Structures are given as C-alpha cells and as structure tokens.
Image (cartoon, rainbow, N blue to C red):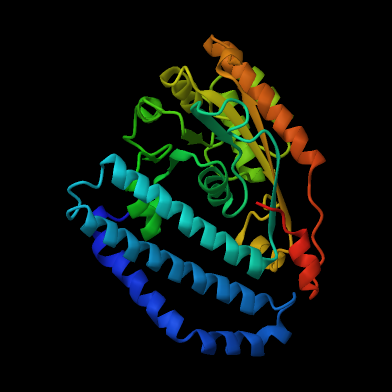
Length: 353
C-alpha cells in the first residue's frame, strides 16, 4: 500500500533530508567502522563500498529534493511548474543528478557501461521513439534513463510501477514530468492501456516513450507464473513461445500496442542489456559486491514503416523481437572485470560514455 501524496511529501521527504544530513556529518565514523569490519566479510572492501554507496544515494536523493523545492519556488510556488521552460529545467536536473550518480557508481563499484548497436538518434534524428526495454537487475531503469537523457539528449516519458514513488526524489520529479505510475493487477485499476496511450500521444522530435513490457524484473518464479497465466487465458501459442525464453518474462503487448497506435509516426527501439541480470535477490546483490562488471547495452532501431499494422501481427512481431533479445543475452554475458589498483589501466578501460 502506497502512502498518500501528502504523507510522502510532508513526512517522508523531510525525513530523507534530515537523514542525509546525519549520515553526511557522520560519514567518517561509518567508513571507519566498516573498514574495521571488512576482514570479517568476503570480497574486496565490500562493506565500506556498500555503506558508502548507500549513504551517497540518500544524500543524492536529499540534494535532488532540495533542488526540486528550489524549482518549485522559482516557478511561482508551482504556478508555472508545467510550462515548457520549467519542464525542460526538470529534464536538465534529471541529467545532472543521473550523471553524478553514475560517476559515483563507476568509481565505487568498478562498473562500466558499453553501448553497442543503433543509438536512438542515428536511425532518424528528430523522430520520436518508443523505447521497449527488458527489465532485469537493480538499477537497470536508471541506466536506461541516464543513457537517453545524457547520451542521446532525449526527454523520456516513462511507464513505471507506482511503488517507485516510495523514493521521494523519484516521486516528486517524475510526477512533475509527463510520466505514468501504474499498479498492475491492483483491484479497481482499469484502463491501463488507455492511460498508456494518452501518455504516448503528442510525442515530439526529442521525446522517447519508455515502456517495460515484462512488467517487472525477471525471476524464475515470475517466468513460470507468467507462462501459466498465458495458458489459463487460452493463449497456448504465446505460452509455448514464452517457454523458449530463458532470460526474459513473456511480454505483455497491450501497453506497447496502445503506444504505437497513439504515436504512429514514432519508431520503436528495442533495448537489451546484460551484466546486472543475475542479481535477483538482496543476497545476490550482496554476493556480487563489489560488482567489478561491464554492463553491455544493445539498441535496435525499427522505423515506423516496418512496424506491422494488425494487432495479431504486432503481437507476433513483439515475440519475435523478444526471442532475438533472449538469444543476444545468452551470447553477450560479460566477464567480470579484474579488480586492481592500476588506476591508469582502469581509466583506459572506461568507455567514453
């Protein structure tokens, strides 16, 4: 159950700012304690790196909230917050904070991100795009939005789970921009496809409509349950195709089809990634830290004239792409990057992105 907006804005958000001040002023104490405990935990400086990253995230969240409060005051206490100038200011702020977050992640987790395939602006610059991404691993949506905003200068519109509004900065920022929080499967929640279609309407030249058709991160249990659900609805052909997927949940086509109908001039970009997808549980994340990984992202661009016209053809087309992405994931699992103290070599290994 999500707390009401007034509680999230007037109680949780101020508590995060207070917590950030406390953690920041006591940071040396936390690092000394975790350094002292490091010999008792496996991994190279696992405890200090994890605690440092956690504190950084809280401080990052609080700094974003303070900046967003400043924009709210500057807009006339919310009077002009929906105008193009202030909408653009919020996208610029998003880019700055995501760039800072990934700089810290790269430094503290020895994480690199490589992009292969078509950039969202190389297929047809100035064309709106519908970005269809797999959903797996911690932070993969942050990685994708970071890429769209900072590398490709796109303004994303995102369909995402309502529970993400527990994060105060995400809550305030994304509710000010054209995004849509949904609660799949919640009783009383209907017309999700209609809401998705409304969000995808009116895309302009630098917009990117982002959707995750799986509806959640991949887990073996969710895969089995999703396939059983297809069979229960009499969709045997889709269930059989879903059984051949080893790394993905079967896609839910309704939202994507609604977006395509609402934005007929938009191309579609499919996104796959590997590197974080084996971290399913909290225990997995703990065992993997420090990550020392190379995250690989792959983009495929489909122009609007190549998108099938009929609903059945589009569903089959989506499943064809999901099979292609599943195969690509199997073929591009990155090897762990060796941890070392040669900073010159490490800087040389970091891609230009």
